[in-house]
Length: 241
Length: 241
Image 1 (cartoon, each protein chain N blue to C red):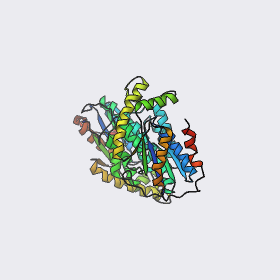
Image 2: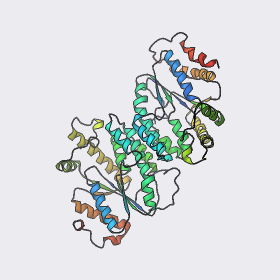
Image 3: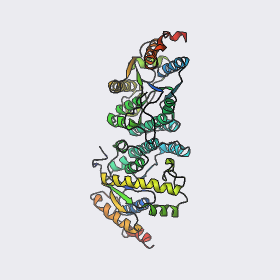
Image 4: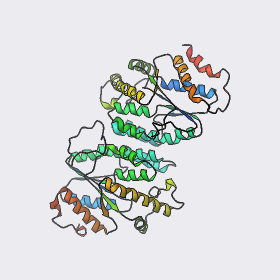
């Protein structure tokens, strides 16, 4: 099955995983800037963004129509559509595909919602196995501090509010995301995710991320030569804090 | 009926080992008379004092609009399609079928997982993957397969002033340059899948080439045997309804 076997497309697939507030999106966006400045062709895809299911997800969330099973299924539908349209073509064309969350998100989150782990895994059998999967591991306190510092409120499903764990969003988030973290640990060992310490500074993490990415880019075609100095700009910009 | 699922069932759903109602499925191609026979069965059963509800593909409140929109678009990939239909069914199993069965209803389902399994398999998806995907589906009490030769199906559809449907002709998979040939090829492939599933899922195959009266009479005999053999005493005669 594709999710277990290395692909033979000319492109490279790099995915980031982690709970909300783990810093994965920040890191991926820094990596994207870096790779582009290095002369690579890069495309980006994000969890839960397919135009085909957007309406349905919105309706389901607004009217609270989702059960753990349908929530899981609609995300698999979303993923299948993006896999077909936004992941396979760039991989076939030899690009670097950066994915903010991948099937592993479903393995961790849907299992935390009570879906059968074997069922969830078999649903995503068709997913291309990434060349590099980075899991940004943080503890709940760090995640909560980052989210409440930056955003106004926690997202309903991200806090597991649909499960009725607690009427308080922060408490619910803690309970639910703790379960997600446990599942992530299982997924990380099962699928060989590279675990990064998400509590370190942005710069430290980015440096490690670039080090991990480098070997998998060997022999990959570039559109232009690296721009002198450009590569380090984002690092210096954020590294002054 | 006994509560059995094809796989691990539905997450977070507590049910007894038995549901007082009965789930009866009618499968078959578009144009074989599924909806006519379901309507006739429903009227007959209600006349006998049974509470009856009917459900059909893509009728879920969650996904109906989304699937319609996706079918209008330019690309609806086979995996995405299978998952979207699975979402629809899961939503109806949880929100329509199980509640009705719990209240003792006879639920008549106008198609079930088998049509979507056949569609996926015809489009090259692994039947085993499809079967696993539907692990959340309740095993029906009985599945009637209205079987009709595709050539007869075409004549029947056209002489009623109907058109050969784009999706029912499998136009998305490029089987033939014209609609008629594509429809014919596609329906033959679908029939092969149904015949393959007939043994696996224990279908009761009904010869749908006969008159509505004959087919309905056979269906009523079968349903009576299932629910209450005394229903048969006044011999079924559709023309007297």
